[in-house]
Structures are given as structure tokens and as C-alpha cells.
Length: 395
Image 1 (cartoon, rainbow, N blue to C red):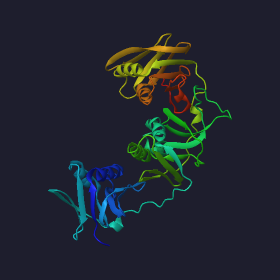
Image 2: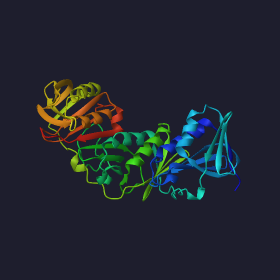
Image 3: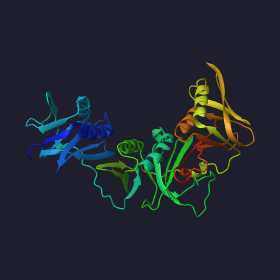
Image 4: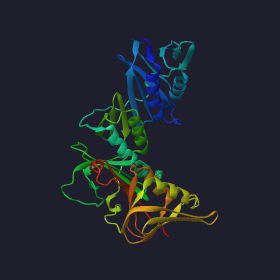
């Protein structure tokens, strides 16, 4: 094969390497996995990266003077491109197994390893695929992934469950129902046993027959792939166990699915509430942050007193002191209530809510609460739906 010679815009090359470098495990026991495979294809420069479980393949336009392949260190290449100014970059293979990069007076020689040692990109076919808008996948991921477990012994809970089913958050209401008239939707679910995040988006059709678990790393890489796309851009999805594929533009992300069954999560979602309040989201966050400063360092327990016109929050730490604050209720239904929650879990749930007001529904003094955007009768209630369930702590 002839030695590779390529000219490419620095910004195009940098974007390509940035995506690849973010996937790579920097402390891998296999040195080859810290490298990227650079190759040419007609008028495109292609880059591949893998950590064995997840693989990314992408390409951008380039001036290909001579085709070829090279395997070079991803972090070094990323650092070099990051420091170079905008403009054309030329690079070519040398006889001494090095890749020469040049931009005006800047010249770099990177060691090139044996191409045959680089893991092959997993074989794939975008068969029975379906398309989802980038903004829809972003909604599903952002509203759930923060609830995933960090306990590696419960590996199936460290990822996000992806399924298609009849919606369980009907538009404009919170009641969980099993009405046959419910429409089909995409659904992402994540839980660590202490809280649960669920997000849905209606769809017209899908070829996803069974739910799958996307690994934690796979979700992280999907978020990065989404960040390189526009909101209205279509992302093609194909489930081909043991992998799920995402194609966005000229990039293909292959993610190894987590084996095992996801727990039956629906019983964790309260079907009724004894008390419900509507609160200004930002004011709730600010007040709870202040109170949590003096909560237990480990458990972050805060007592919530739901009263007629406000929610009073109290925290106490024997080593530091105590704090209390309150936030006004815009609306309230039900009796007064006292319950205890982990402040961090509530704050992370509130951070995922984009609406100005939040609907909080309490099941009782020893029951979980649910938090979800309060949109009133706005059209958005027909589309993006999400909620978070937080389990209570002992008083």
C-alpha cells in the first residue's frame, strides 16, 4: 500500500480526534486501546477508536493525495491539534514508521504502530433501524442518566434502560394508568434503588421489540455524539444484540449492551399522592442548597414540612449546627405533611427540570415523592414527559 498523504482543515481534524479521544480509556492495560486508527476513503479521512466495549467510527472531508493507514497515540494527536491555529494541516507516513504532521513552521513526528494490531470495528448492519431527533435522545438521556447506580456490583443498574411501550406519564396529568388508548413512546429509565428517573417521548412507530440496557459508558458516549449534532438532526438507531448502534451524520457509535434483565421499575412509581404542591423551581433549589450546607456530610438528610402556604426545610448536623429555610407554595392540595429526603437526590432531580415551576407530589410521611415539570396546559405536555421518584429517609 502506498504511503498516506493528506491535507485537511485543522478544525475538521480536531473535531474528529476530539470525538475519538473522549471515548478512549486513558489507563487501559492494552496500550493499543489508547491509539486511534487513521485511514483514508475516497475523499474522506476516517478515524476509529475503541475501548473494546464501545467503538466510534467517523469521517470528514479531506484532500487525499495518497491513501493509507496509521495508528497513532490519541492524546498526543489531540494535544497537538488543540494548540495549532486554524488552517490547513498536511500529514504523511514516513518510511521509519512515523506520521509527520506539518502546518507552516510547526512539524511533529508521531510514532505509528502496526495497523494489524488495532481491533477491528465491530461488524454492523443498520437493519430494522429507526430514526430519532437529536433533541429527543438528549431529553431522554438528560432526564434519567443522573439516577444510574455507581455500584459496580449491580452493573445492570449502572446503565440506562431503553424500551418502547405505552406511555405511563399521560399528558397533562400525573396519574399512572394502563388505559388501552395510551400511545406508544420511547422510554428511558434509570435507578440506583434510592431514586428513579423516567422520561418519555411519543413516537409513530419503532422496530425496538424488547427493552435493552445501555451501559454507563455507552450513555456518556451517546451524550457526546448528540453534542456534535443539531437539535433537529436525525440519529439513526439500530438494535443488533449484543450491541446498539447510533449513526449521526458520518459518525457511527457502537455500544455493547449490558447483559441481564432490568428490574420491574413500575411498582416504584407512586400511583396516588396525599399531598401535592407547585413550587418555583429556582427558588426551591436555592433554599434547599442553603439548608443542605448543614446537613449530614454523608446522608444529606433534610426534613420537609409541607404547610398551607410554604414548604419549610430543616437540617441538623451535631458537629456543625442547624439550618432552616422555606419556599412558598404556588399551589397546594392535601393535608400538611412532614417527611425526610436526601437533599442531594432532590437537588439533582430539580436540576433536570427545565420548567419554571415544579410539581412535587408526596405519598405520605414514609412514602416516596415524585418531581416533574409543571407546564399547565402548554403544548409541551403533549410531547416531552419526565419525572423523578425519590425514596424517603427515616425521620
